Image 1 (cartoon, helix red, strand yellow):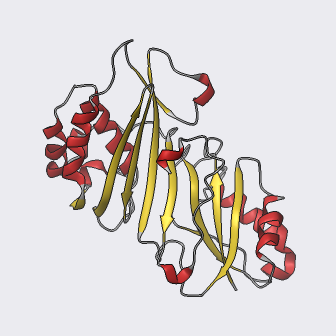
Image 2: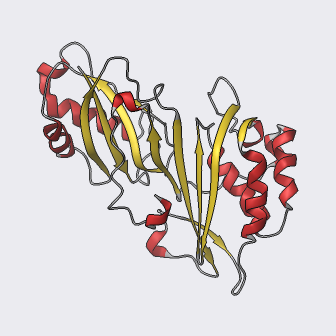
Length: 274
């Protein structure tokens, strides 16, 4: 049978989602935990392999990650949650579990992904959120030009070629993606970006955030974002920003699959973001 899980994790200790040789990854931790829970009868000749909605990078977090896997045993939904969690480290947790039809794919059935980037800015960084938020040094009594960033965001909405914001290591077959919305929330000393789209290129959100900040600190004009987008040239966009503040917040699926909403009540992020 096919099981879907909803996950949250702190990506700080890991080399990203995807399994890598001689590296600690979230995929490896989860597959090992599921295998330990179901035992030999659940694995038999087929090792547990999980498919994810989005492969997060090293240091990137998740509030609403979704995965699926196929297994030869049946358990109650809560048994999957409690049992798999008993074999996971504290930095990863299963929030919900449910059986799904064989035509459900955590990756290919998703039609929208939501990312949140949390940024702390000011004269001094905060050690309390060092791995949970990005940081940008700003002099005292200086803040971002939020209106300029919001103006810059308008050119990104819709279907575009996002080559200028694409990592050289990106494995996507096409740089053409659709951004549905971009919201920027200013709550000094915090700045948040909430970006929704059908899919994202490798490092795309972090490259967008880096470029937004160039505009926000008045090094570039709002028009510059449009110029970068149209250039289709990664070298003229801003450097890739820190992974620390990036959260995969939510994955949207057609209603027919009855996938639960992410459990966000325990997030430290402000409720108006979620």
